[in-house]
Image (cartoon, rainbow, N blue to C red):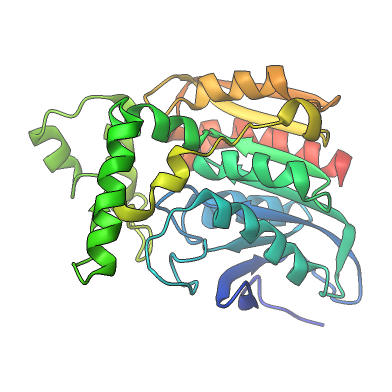
Length: 311
């Protein structure tokens, strides 16, 4: 049976559908059983960017079926209100995607892994603890979004931020216009004009707001009135007890404000997994690991053998 290398599908979530791209391995045969990996996109990203076109494609070429979903409320997926970045829904998405995978005759339901990139690294950690159908977990420059929202993303004043979010939500349900924040400057030139030199913010702008990584749905917008959920959330809560699956963490050693390097080592230290490793891409940053060939190769040279061993 011949099948295109990528198929776009729609799968049911709670009361809406999730859009996803499935990347097939070379020589795919639908009568056979394959291990599968869910590749989850960064915060503000979409399935066409690093989680799909870089990591999804490469892992599929190594012999896996890879499914790359758009988050609920974002991208081509359904759900209202739009631009909702709610960790509880992002974590649940993994289970809905697995519900779909286990119905596919060519997927081995006992060999399903997860990969989370940037903020989805934290989401994948949190999902894997309780979604026991995930048998192996990889993260690439994974960050704990809850920690970020308690710290830098709320100006280190989370209580004041939540008060403002609460007031905005009340205003919106009474008819005010929704407040949707652009999380990045409109262009690298604008970031330079604003004097933004912090490595993660500057490089995020360069990736998302230039031809290097720009995609229709990779818009980096967030609905302000619902961000309080993230302020009160912690990706790593109970990892000492519940995260027992094999774990492969990839980080760059040029740390930035988003804290993936710090979070990677915290996860390594705390996770209950007996089989766990951290791979440091020396001389590379958070956003280098999105698409630059040399650091991506470092990540894949660890992740692909890891999934081959455990799936």
